[in-house]
Length: 135
Image (tube, rainbow, N blue to C red):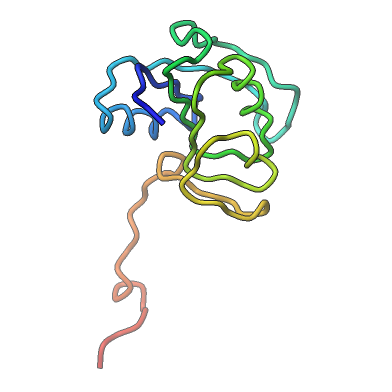
């Protein structure tokens, strides 16, 4: 699949996976592309708000995202970088044809909660909450 000269992270979900992959592949050129398809929970037409200029047509670039869901964002980015290899962590069936490789396929109705999308909070030990005790 490689070697790659650069990585393009799809903002925002692909930023963290792209940074990890860039480190592991020892790639220093990390570009980003920003495509807005949702405002809060309302879905609209995709709008590119930042183009991946350094990636050209995508030759020798790896596009990284956390998830391909419907494939809407992936198709927009693929049109911008037709020669890039597109990889994501999770792929849902509707978006699967838009990517070249993925780690895990999940059902279309699966909701994935990523560590970078959650708020860390302290959870009191079960013993203090009146939970199970060892006999």
